[in-house]
Length: 255
Ligand SMILES: C[S@@+](CC[C@H](N)C(=O)[O-])C[C@H]1O[C@@H](n2cnc3c(N)ncnc32)[C@H](O)[C@@H]1O
Picture (cartoon, rainbow, N blue to C red):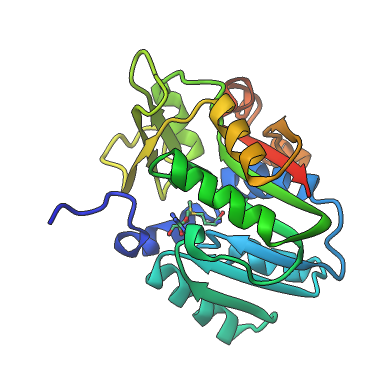
């Protein structure tokens, strides 16, 4: 049987350092938490929680409860082991986010690097329905995903941010693109990426269709930002291309 290139059971060890690299900390985490309105005492559903790093941050920022779901047994095992070593009160479960159904009315639903794993429009819609159905009235969702407004393949210099994107030209709805993730940020290392994902391209209109169809009346797109601490820590100009290219975007909505 052909191996699924997006199966994190095969590269969960490589993801640990990726989830702690400068792009993850100063761009992803910073941008996600910037748009979360109320975390203190909130109940949080973290879809595609991976090793639980975002769930744990929610608890450190005084969420009342965080429940994480991921399709990969190995990622959830790692999340549970970390939780066992230093308990913050997170709960973790294995499940495809599309199949979660209704659990309860959460204050906040997160989908950090989930949506671009949808294999077709129906699965994208199923993710959006799970987000909608698990939010209380007035609750917020924050998603972080590959920026569908820009389909420029990356020059070599994004290697220093730990990723490279390769789109088909022209990049049409439903075409496959490649996302390589690296567990070291060595700009001169062009060896094969330990994680090389194959994703389906959905246009911004398709994202909007899926969220609307799920029940949201409006969604808001935001560009990725970099924490001033990260700008200070990295060499001058390090983030320039990243901010110009905007590899990721944040989507925010309310029920
Ligand atoms: C790039 S990791 C992100 C993990 C975490 N949200 C973070 O930001 O560090 C992507 C995760 O999505 C999970 N994933 C992919 N498709 C999924 C699905 N259909 N349902 C649930 N999790 C999924 C993978 O197993 C992997 O752990």
